[in-house]
Image (cartoon, rainbow, N blue to C red; front, side, top):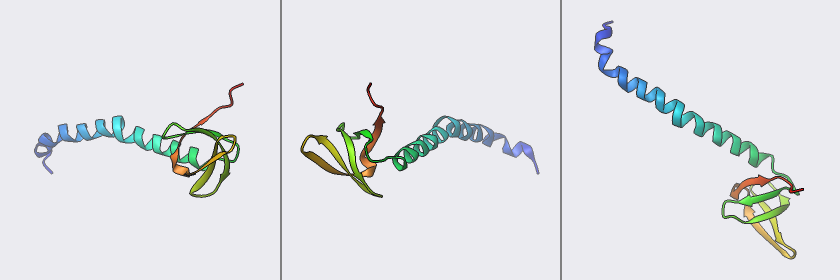
Length: 90
Protein backbone atom coordinates (compact mmCIF):
# COMPACT_ATOMS: atom_id res chain seq x y z
CA UNK A 1 0.00 0.00 0.00
CA UNK A 2 1.28 3.42 -0.92
CA UNK A 3 1.09 5.79 2.07
CA UNK A 4 1.79 8.84 -0.07
CA UNK A 5 -1.69 8.53 -1.55
CA UNK A 6 -3.17 9.03 1.95
CA UNK A 7 -1.49 12.44 2.33
CA UNK A 8 -4.47 14.57 1.31
CA UNK A 9 -6.76 12.70 3.73
CA UNK A 10 -4.65 13.25 6.86
CA UNK A 11 -6.04 16.76 7.60
CA UNK A 12 -9.58 15.44 7.14
CA UNK A 13 -8.93 12.56 9.55
CA UNK A 14 -7.37 14.93 12.11
CA UNK A 15 -10.37 17.26 11.79
CA UNK A 16 -12.73 14.37 12.49
CA UNK A 17 -10.72 13.37 15.58
CA UNK A 18 -10.84 16.96 16.89
CA UNK A 19 -14.60 17.16 16.29
CA UNK A 20 -15.10 13.88 18.09
CA UNK A 21 -13.27 15.00 21.24
CA UNK A 22 -14.64 18.56 21.26
CA UNK A 23 -18.25 18.01 20.18
CA UNK A 24 -19.48 14.43 19.96
CA UNK A 25 -17.99 12.93 23.12
CA UNK A 26 -19.09 15.74 25.51
CA UNK A 27 -22.61 15.64 24.04
CA UNK A 28 -22.80 11.88 24.61
CA UNK A 29 -21.68 12.36 28.24
CA UNK A 30 -24.32 15.06 28.74
CA UNK A 31 -27.07 12.84 27.27
CA UNK A 32 -26.02 9.97 29.54
CA UNK A 33 -26.10 12.22 32.63
CA UNK A 34 -29.58 13.53 31.70
CA UNK A 35 -30.89 10.01 31.16
CA UNK A 36 -29.56 8.96 34.58
CA UNK A 37 -31.11 12.04 36.22
CA UNK A 38 -34.52 11.31 34.65
CA UNK A 39 -34.42 7.66 35.69
CA UNK A 40 -33.52 8.62 39.29
CA UNK A 41 -36.52 10.94 39.76
CA UNK A 42 -38.74 9.99 42.67
CA UNK A 43 -41.74 11.21 44.61
CA UNK A 44 -40.89 14.25 46.75
CA UNK A 45 -38.05 15.57 44.55
CA UNK A 46 -38.00 19.33 43.98
CA UNK A 47 -37.54 19.97 40.26
CA UNK A 48 -37.46 22.72 37.65
CA UNK A 49 -39.01 22.00 34.27
CA UNK A 50 -37.62 23.03 30.91
CA UNK A 51 -40.25 25.80 30.89
CA UNK A 52 -39.00 27.14 34.25
CA UNK A 53 -41.83 25.83 36.46
CA UNK A 54 -40.70 24.95 39.99
CA UNK A 55 -42.51 22.22 41.89
CA UNK A 56 -42.46 19.00 43.90
CA UNK A 57 -43.17 15.60 42.34
CA UNK A 58 -46.32 14.09 43.89
CA UNK A 59 -46.77 11.09 41.57
CA UNK A 60 -44.52 9.62 38.91
CA UNK A 61 -44.61 6.74 36.44
CA UNK A 62 -42.61 5.74 33.36
CA UNK A 63 -43.68 8.63 31.11
CA UNK A 64 -45.64 11.17 33.16
CA UNK A 65 -45.62 12.83 36.55
CA UNK A 66 -47.84 15.01 38.70
CA UNK A 67 -46.07 18.15 39.82
CA UNK A 68 -47.39 20.26 42.73
CA UNK A 69 -46.66 23.91 41.97
CA UNK A 70 -48.99 25.55 44.52
CA UNK A 71 -51.27 24.51 47.42
CA UNK A 72 -54.15 23.29 45.25
CA UNK A 73 -52.49 23.17 41.85
CA UNK A 74 -51.04 19.97 40.38
CA UNK A 75 -49.81 19.80 36.80
CA UNK A 76 -49.50 16.61 34.79
CA UNK A 77 -46.28 16.74 32.75
CA UNK A 78 -44.11 14.45 30.70
CA UNK A 79 -41.22 13.05 32.69
CA UNK A 80 -38.83 14.35 30.01
CA UNK A 81 -39.95 17.92 30.81
CA UNK A 82 -37.69 18.01 33.89
CA UNK A 83 -34.61 20.16 33.39
CA UNK A 84 -32.94 19.66 36.76
CA UNK A 85 -33.45 18.52 40.33
CA UNK A 86 -33.16 21.28 42.93
CA UNK A 87 -31.30 20.40 46.11
CA UNK A 88 -33.14 21.22 49.37
CA UNK A 89 -32.50 24.78 50.42
CA UNK A 90 -31.67 24.62 54.12
